[in-house]
Length: 349
Image 1 (cartoon, one colour):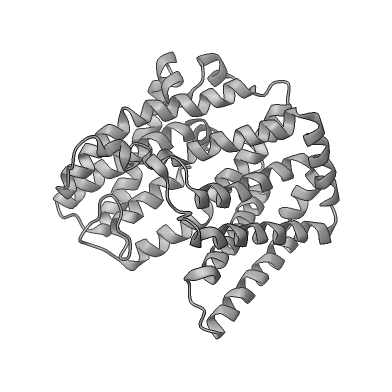
Image 2: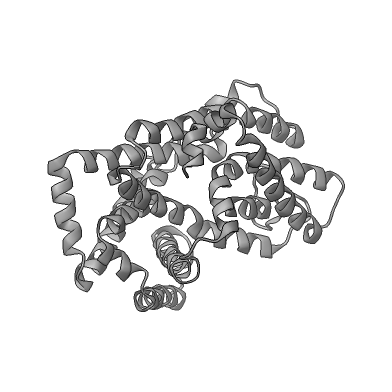
């Protein structure tokens, strides 16, 4: 989630990106960085979320269903009606386009960067159904057990690709990218659910997970992705339409896979700074958006060059959100409103 700082700061200076705020001083490298992070950041997040939901829900020490829903809903509402309101006025003032506060809700700008929490809430409900309804869980576990073989593992990957094809095919019937009141869109829900469910599967069977994080499997999937890109280049299929969408799915899967491989090899042990960032991650994500916009507006106003302003935003926002979390963690009200947990739950993390 910390990568959100890098992504959203890059959006300000990307040459082919028009974000909430945009600098007149742009460079294509920031567009490349933004697209690169976008390819795996949220897919990896939802994959981890699915993995942890299954593992922690079955653990006696893990949070129950009500606790997990509270961790999503309370921070969502707290930020939507405080930080996002301030953000709305900042952005509208910067763009000189204020068109009334009623549009804050109708346009979906009240949700803003919190869209992932809406998806996550629905995914959790689906996960609870699979876990707590015994007949459903029994069927799910039998299917997962079959995935232990190489053939079935790759069959799972292609089944998810077919699901994605089906998702894209209904775009002619209605706009799958439309999000009423900014809450949830058909494409967003379906695409990220693929990765959430993958994480769910990996948590249910360690053999399947070990196959996923093996370097040989990652190399094979990378070669498959590169072959598809080569075919697309040879036939001039471009980056748009069905081929472009499938290429993005493959890129997301492969980049997620290499993230997991990297973490399993190099970050499998507890490291103090990683533990600190992990405990602060929720706060960092909820507050970073407003701070990135605030610093971005300030630096644009003073015409600071992007090579200087980009690292200023990254460092300033990261340090400020870490400090904010450290100070806020002393208050039960802060932890409840912006993390959805009690001090006791925070101490046990």
